[in-house]
Image (tube, rainbow, N blue to C red; front, side):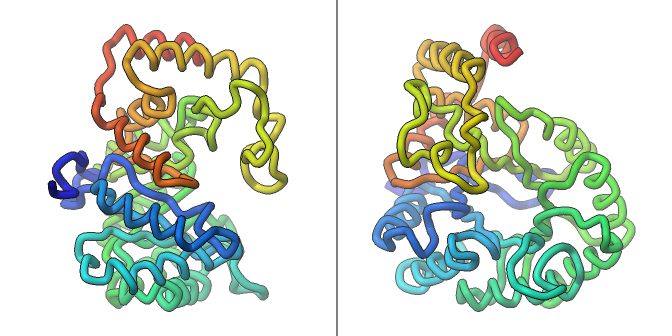
Length: 320
């Protein structure tokens, strides 16, 4: 059976690009502290399921840069013959190295970061290159200069933005249109517990630009993981930039329980239903995983992609 038989590929805005409904993100669990064999199993297993889009950034790890190195190692050993079947993303904008050029939106930072990412992955180009976060201290024209250079030099095929608010998104899209530099996609935090991105998606839809959701499961909240409290080793139990312990409130857990009951009536897990919900507005959902089994379960969400009006109304009522 072909790996492409069961995956759903969805149009990214008005472009010619098709993205898998589920994409794999390498934000966590692919760094220096992750077993290489498990990383390899997840990436190769994902590809066998038809996941062609792998989302990375310069600072993903830990340590920063190590996720790109891990992916590059697997690409060279196992996937190089399939390079033209893959859609690989990287990003620049968050802190990466010391000194005045190690982060934000200057042309110096963005191009230097892209060059470093290409070296770490062993790629000649990335399929999409994002400015990872807006920078109010750098003229938008300079950031666009950098994205244009990445495209014109052949180091990236498409340009994207991430974490821009609705007005910043509109400003960026209009400025790019004036320069005849098409933006393919915007990547944003979007899930049942954080719907603020819907205002951004409205802007993107008006311009025919694609959207892709990260944290569609609210870093594990929209699963069964926290129903019995905060387990040891979970993101909420770990200090850092992940899910905060005080985010796991009784109110949210009660909503999770109610959503889980609705998902069961649909014949899905809560995680599967949460992914399908995100895909009502997004081209693709980027999942994180610590095992291939999690990826396999999440891809099965695509077996039931539609909601009834009553189900959507029930979800809205639960979320309040």
